[in-house]
Length: 197
Picture 1 (cartoon, helix red, strand yellow):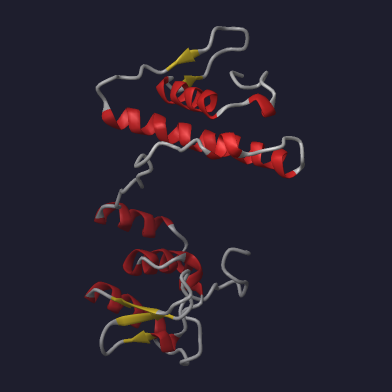
Picture 2 (cartoon, helix red, strand yellow):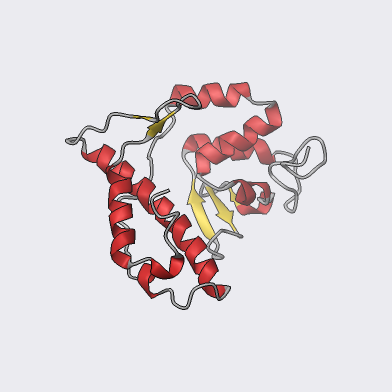
């Protein structure tokens, strides 16, 4: 709303920076009944993580704004994109949330899954491999002698080897029993590709 009444051609880098700063300093909105005054969360000034989170949110909103402005520029609705190109997002505010499942949480998750899908989940926990990487694994990709799994097609496009723990190696030994070298390790019992049944 703050920028909504300003013609795109009249936007300045400073006005966008002011908007971004105000956005970062404004606490997150709370659900408010229609017609009621907007309520906000309390934003503790001394909480560095809360400030970081608000800046990260402001950066994401800036990305959306810039995408809309760039679209207007590409469509010839504004003569230049120079003003918003000069606006930089807050630095070092995007941090990944790191949370690992405990052993008991992992065990409960596996037990809650149907058998075949539970094996897929357990393989993911043991290898850290992505879903697509796991569903393409063939028996020949598991080396029981050294306890590794070869991921031939990875996101980076380069193959990699995953060294398994004893527990992981035991899991893969159970999964490959009686299968030919070119068979999939993790087969969907319905006969469909994973994710389609």
